[in-house]
Image 1 (cartoon, one colour):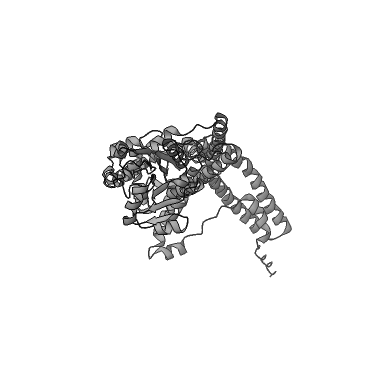
Image 2 (cartoon, one colour):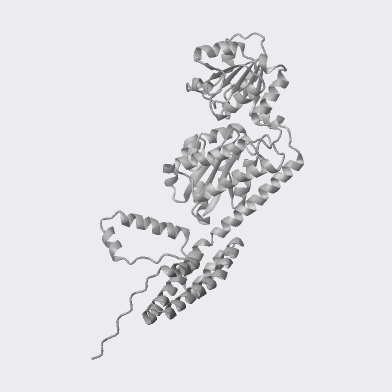
Length: 474
């Protein structure tokens, strides 16, 4: 397996492009993934300023095909030309996949360095992929490791201890533009998603009391019932906009406020701060050209975000580096599994053949049992060092040398991941055919790999056949 990621974020692209690409986030369902043999699974991380696809490819030779599959899917569902999609998505493979995701989850790659909302978004991305059925075991391990790393950064450093987030910085900017108490402001909030929920919570913490919530999808009543605020209809929205001091967009373009809409409201000289936190723009950029209106965008927030203390960032980066090395070390060690299984299966087959000879010669005598126990103990000891060396060589990236040695010395051919999956698929197809039962009945049972330790322990459970009675003398 090969993990890879295709990244589009605020660090490399303008947010408008990121927003257009994000329109394809829902396109990665099991049906879409199944169309591409090179693509084994995906997890999509889409936030207000990043769109990232984490994928697992069949093997190193399939990375290009897997990338092409992702690019095609994004292009087909976002409306962005394929060439632009391909150039916009930065591809990472190897250790850089884990390093980037761990940095993202820890808040090191955020517009507001150290913000902790992203850790929850990383966790939700995995949950959503698990629910849709697109995640693989390796991707699950990757995202779970990212969440553990984020927790370690949070508990071991002061990064993000000031509680700054994109929303909090945006509200700070609004206070700078139009000073005053939030308790005296009328606020209109567009959207009812997780981002809108976080925004409403911060508004409450700052003392805001007059908050109206509008949802183009009609979810405002349910949203305010679980929190606070007043649900707005199409009719009441206009009334609230006339007396609003702050409007905040978190809906993602479901109801765009145009400059002409505000002009028609005849607000006079009443100041208005418009905070557009939606990636796909809730507010017309021309709002900033209107008199008495100040428009704050995600770009504004990113430029105004405070820097974190250098020491905290350094410590967090060190934790991320150590977590990346540990993840990669474990991942490389897992590449030895197939070789270890093949070696043990081969050794077990030879052992069982010799044990049968001992039983045939000695029956269930004490001497026969002692010989069998000694044989199993010897095999266990012989397999210990080759197993340890397999893990060590895998960690060093030399597992191919190990499998070549098994082939040269013992004639053991270690199946590739593709071969193992192909065999499993062939068995499934055979099981669906009318002749499957007859073929299965005629086929000898395969020898299951048994660990040496289990072999010795299981010896006591083996029932020896009763010895044949001696022939009567004639």
